[in-house]
Image (cartoon, rainbow, N blue to C red; front, side):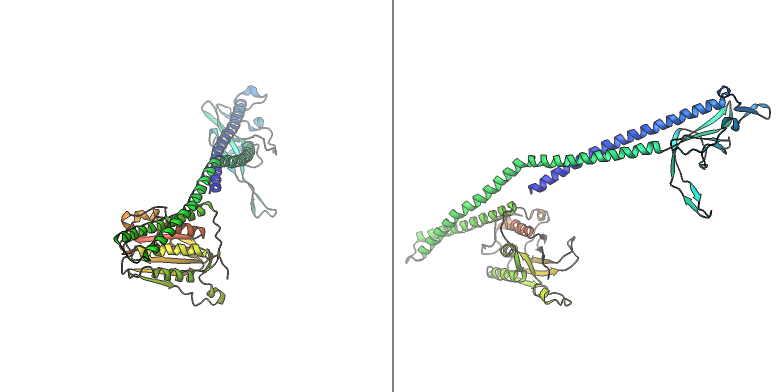
Length: 485
């Protein structure tokens, strides 16, 4: 239990740290990426300003860049040959490319080897575009797409007065953002991974240190409970033995007086109380051993059909006055099953015989205890094969299911979630006897169902309950077989 708590604490430490580191890394990544983009945009805008200044200012070059159109002094055009004399292809990734468009958006000049086929429009803030280029195969028949190219672009409209001379678009490869971003992601992931490993190791160590005093206190409490239960059993046994001897001596007396009768009644009350106290101590000792995990009970082959027959037979002898019909129904295997060994062990599982007897004795005794005279208690045993769904739970291996149904007073719906809590009683009125005789098999301390749940959990099974007030209650126990035949 403490190892599971320690593990959960370490996981929580690591998870919280991971979330904080992811938030921090995301902030760093977004800040660095936005900084890189701003730097590229500033570079592109600077190039646009320089080129635009050269285009519109004649002292920029010794040759004429802007000239009149047809000797009309009011209209101008760009002398492309004079402004952009060389159109060499560039193979460098960090090259800044220029494109010149006419006022109508027609590409006139470009430093790119192939046109981008991207619509032109003014944009000084910068944008990222995705360009997919394609080429023909050797036979010039099929188009083979290249990997997409990402570019950062700035577009500027060039004007002289009110006349638009054209559009200048400046492009820069996206790799100056993508490459540092990938490296940053790798570095952050590596750092976060190493940090999480360190935090997980530190969390495991610190949670262990934090759990040490709690574990020591819990161990002392468990040891005290076990020791107290063990020490209480001896005096209780001695009291019970002496009371039984005193009662036997009184029965041998020749004459019964009023005093002896009263004395006998008092001793019987003491005997009944010691029996109840002894059973309570045994129950507490059993639960303490189950909680501490020091139970030395071993598992063996248990034919559950024979076990239930024995328990039902014992319980039938305890309630003859109430005239309750107690029956056991064994669901036969399907006719398609032909394996002799499997049929012979159809209801056999690995478990502890004594604990299973106690489990079903508690369930059947409670059903008899809260069923009025003339009622009915039915015990049903069935084997669940293969993939099955029982009350919303899926099982992929063979299970044994035992149902104990009664026609008793029922249990309120609000009490069902707490039914297996220790010392929990649904209603003080239900603790009174519904018949004429009190039975020793009924715990009466609120531990019977808690013990049943502990036994089922010890056998890695599951217990559930359905009840309707005034109609009856059904307990279902599902136990894994864990055997191969």
